Image (cartoon, rainbow over all chains, first blue to last red; front, side, top):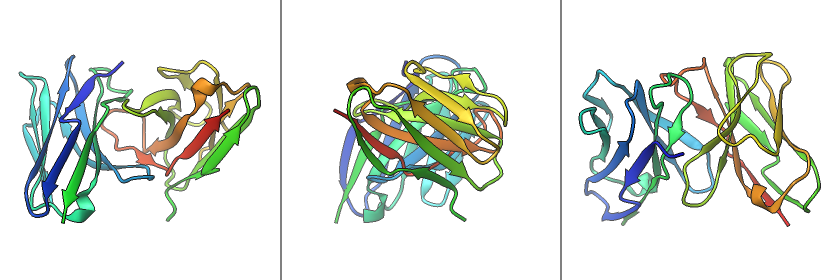
Length: 111
Length: 114
């Protein structure tokens, strides 16, 4: 079962532009996490946002959470070629334990 | 600091063969997980171990078994491989069980069943 669904499935932008990816989910959550996966590698944790938080920042990353719309967005500012990767959201569907993963957004940064 | 190490990185099996995927973490984490990743789908949890000595089924446990050998190691066994088990398998660990815990991943085992 997929709790989180990322949108768009794929995104191609020019280096230096901002990239925005969205994650929608179906049931109430306690926490939502974003991960990055470079081609052929494992996933790397980026940001965790709790249900009582609305926004978190980490370097060039900004994550927002709107629990009323059951959605989150990941913004990468001033994109670089190294940001080319797939990005996944994972939610807990209120269970506090098991993470349920979306299918990811494939981001390509063109030089 | 190696983090999470998976072996082997690649494997090709024939239908019906068995094999064990190995995973070890050096972060002193209590919880460990096995996922499979298929094209166009999110990660799906196969089994997890909340702490040493415990294992529990995830979303897709059929056809697999696991062993939490000690705090560091968590292995996944395919007893009789089937083509439907062709996938990329990821092991992950976290400090504790909980959706507020970041998970740390290995680089995966790419498994093909012919």
